[in-house]
Image (cartoon, rainbow, N blue to C red; front, side, top):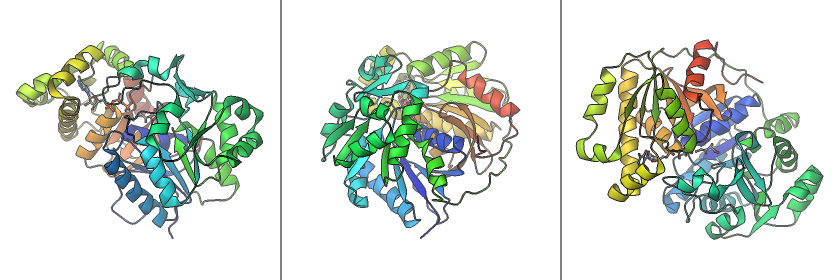
Length: 421
Ligand SMILES: Nc1ncnc2c1ncn2[C@@H]1O[C@H](COP(=O)(O)OP(=O)(O)OP(=O)(O)O)[C@@H](O)[C@H]1O
Ligand SMILES: O=C(O)[C@@H](O)C(=O)CO
């Protein structure tokens, strides 16, 4: 048995950094692994970033199971299946199929699902997921390039994906407090969706679920849990360590087409040099022009390379090339450009988009990240072994000024990993 207490399996890379940020906020020394770890060492809080959100369900299940085996072999007693706070999934999965598989392997007959992240406007009321003031299916998530969300009812979204029953603990019970939630969780087995409207509701829920072996959801429910585990003396906490100082060169690479990223890119282009990638042109002419453009740039001036586009233009590229090929062309391009940027001395790299972040971190051969200061709720600076700083931004996270906020924070930061709040 190893010394791991908490083990998370995240379905994409920005989701993994988001979860790691919440644990770091709670003062936890968290290690973020990119892909299934190949080596034997482990720490008390492990987050494994996979890239399985849109993979075929069989592949997603196989990878999640392998991650579970790795974590349990190191002693993990709490497993967290981290998916998107906007429940991003295709009709076939992978939220449900992976949750079912983890339940079977762990031999548990119930788990909870809590995607709510009130600080970022994701709220669950009577089992319906809201983004800001809009139901999920009326929010910009309806136009997501890979996982368009066309329903807001979590029961209806999850039921076709799972073999077990789907139940609910709704808002009136949550507002009656942790004991009421605990009582309500005694009865049903299967998948139980939890309502949460404000961050206080997450604290209520955490007190009711902190001893469950498997928790599924967004990152926010993870923030109130460590304090409860620490009070119970469940793990030994390591001291924070200083972080490296990355090379000052900087670049933003954006493959996210979310509404917020579009606003952030627009804002940054007011004062940064920009190069737009178009999947149709990439298919025709390859990447040479973009690489040449990058070579003309100075390392430490603000710059952005982006495929970020309006839904109409994304749809046109997808129609011509197919969804997967359009996505892969952009991801491969940004991955190669990240390699070029790092070779040019850009040690501060902001990536927008979960799939895009997966492609970039894989290309940079990053296998482990330490967690630094949080730029915006759910987006921390992360530090690779060679000192490169990466901020992996979920599509809809951050303010309009996010890219400037990110670099300003790093310019100012004395940098200690996982400092307690
Ligand atoms: N102009 C474009 N046309 C077609 N596809 C694009 C275009 N730009 C980006 N893409 C693809 O759209 C997908 C965007 O997914 P990604 O996960 O990177 O962003 P996101 O969904 O906004 O972020 P998150 O998952 O963190 O919310 C990627 O596969 C990307 O390659
Ligand atoms: O939960 C979220 O919204 C994010 O961590 C995410 O998963 C985006 O890909």
